[in-house]
Image (tube, rainbow, N blue to C red; front, side, top):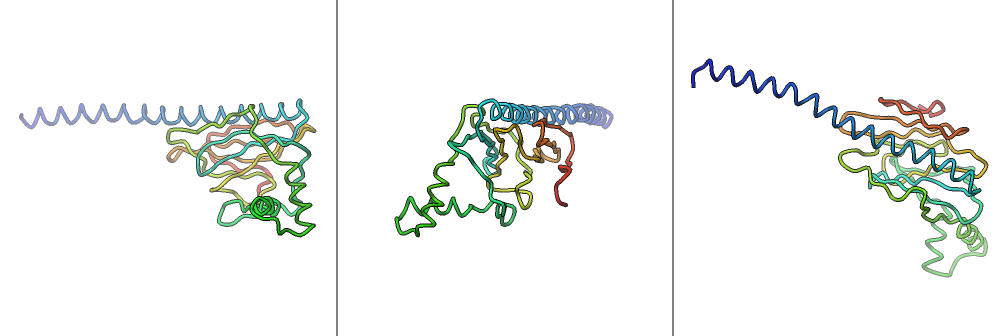
Length: 208
């Protein structure tokens, strides 16, 4: 091959690459948009379902497994005034959850701890059919999740977005990412509406 032929071949290859890269990027963003829209629909659906059914429900975000699903409580539920505990960007099990685990393993609890474990047992959450376990799939992942009862953004473990039978939820900022692209879902606590932003943004009340 002559130098001219080699030069022409390189030019053609360069043009093909220039066309392919934006097309691949568009496909990547389409996957992220689709997963973001699907999750936003789930949040809105859960808001209406909890209010109509008169139940306290929540969406569980499994940040390690890049999946989410819905759960509803058997009885009334109260969040601790002290809020959740966290460590290194992950939720730490509550005292009630620890007591439940201990109660299942042994009977040597104090009377006060047994009462707390019994109350926790009554408000246990069970999987609901509203949102079956949904995998984000592909390269889409949870970047982080912030809900107003959390002390910080969670980047690992599980996070919970609660929905009350009174027709309220919690303010939240959920970030989905695929490579360098990030989409934000901002949840309104009064209406359950979800604002989708094709960028990283925080909830209005989130501490910075």
